[in-house]
Length: 106
Image 1 (cartoon, rainbow, N blue to C red):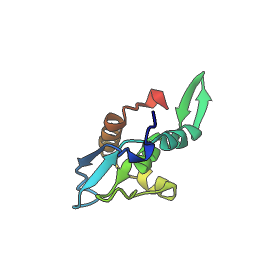
Image 2 (image 1 turned 90 degrees about the vertical axis):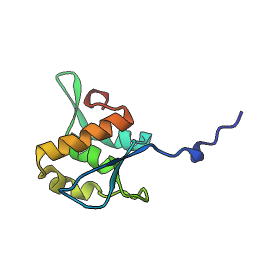
Image 3 (image 1 turned 90 degrees about the horizontal axis):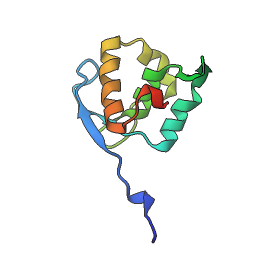
């Protein structure tokens, strides 16, 4: 049996972020590569992994436009972290939901 991995299309969910754009913004499920990027930012503290910049990194790895182009890169990390916590939490909630990933998985 041959499996064509290139045919997989990541799940996407449109979310409204009027604070940033009037255009639709999408949360896209994480790939294994993106999950590993998040895990690279983890350190062990008290025997548990802690991801530094977790919200901003998850947003960077998850937000895309209608064509699937990523909206942010790691160079945007500091600017994303300056956004209101309620806004970031709303985006992270959608990203967690679509990827099936929560903080303890990182």
